Image (cartoon, rainbow, N blue to C red; front, top):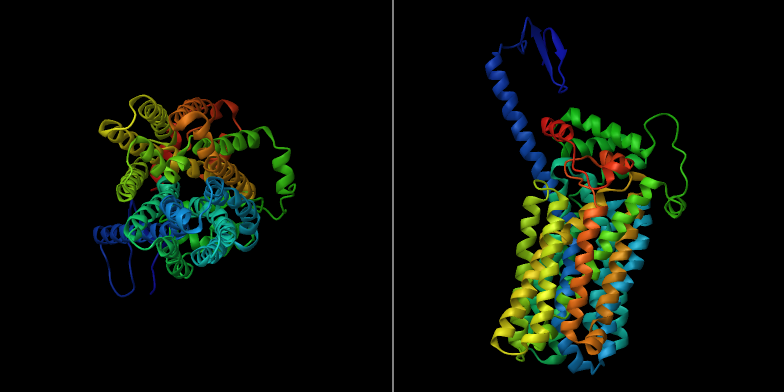
Length: 525
């Protein structure tokens, strides 16, 4: 199709300039400006809609591995009751069985950073699913405690891979203005998995004890089919492609995920610069591990923020609350197994429902406001659980208050520190270090989770369940101070702008995003 008097406009489209107006003249017809503008606007809207749907699909598919982690956490809280009766395991073995998954997953997280830099973000997610499913199948068929531990070992490695790579992948593929909500998707799917685990406990609790827990664990294998299908749909991360000097492939992916071509080129230039490949000279860098062991001041701030927020997410006791909710409710006075499992379903519903609040608000209010609401709310709830179990005791009032405050605690967790923790650690690190630095944060998360899960019963025997929650409330109060002092606001900034944010110590001390940045980014949409 021929064009007369062509000129290229800022959006990479071609038009004709006549006086102060533009008219597109085709060889076979003339189209008025009004019609063309309307057509162009319609095309742009159609492309924006298509782009949003594509990015949303990528985020959902990349988050499927998180269902596996959530399901394991949720289902084990109920399955352990039947495993105790069937395999006659001790209390110490129960703690080891529950807590070892988190400890073992740190090896997966450590290996995941390097693996994702070598084979890519996408295929690391595939590897995570394969390893986890092997572990889940082993646990389902386990004839003894020893074989069950082997299955937990494999499942833990798979979870370690999956839990660190999904947020990184989503952060690297998402537009700046929706990155926060999209990067929260893994946390949604973790919560969905926990809820499904609780429902599975309740649904299969009527089966014979030697069959029920095997069915509960076996159901966790099913998501692998969806994960396999997802690999044929989602693209590789454009930032990883740039790291491998596959710039044209990266551009192709970004054109599918960002609806403004000018922004694509600007973002691509930023990524090239951050990756050290923006010029003919190859960026000479120290080995990643060496750079993290002797970090620059800005990288040290990033590591403190990322590692710290990951640890606080767990040492405030969320996994203990979820894994041992039946024991907590037993302490409040619920003895019937079906009622115990029904109460844990209420916990799962609360945890899952309130993650949606974070999804809608994280890119509007920002990361820090949600962290404040979350950590302050959790502090109050954890203290209230301690008061309920210590001073009110068993009875209808104690049961009602225990359920209320446990559900409220997981709700506040889901509103803020649950998803925001993963968003921050996928945002704040430089491209060349992102996978392995985020993996280090995930290791801190998993170690703290494991230590809390493996020591909870022993600590409650020493200082009571109520006393343990008083300790959690003090730690949660400290996390409020950590957020105030050490977590910057990253809302609306590109990943490359966030890297610059940490280089300015004054900016790092909790300052808000500059108005000019907001206007600049809004104008691009």
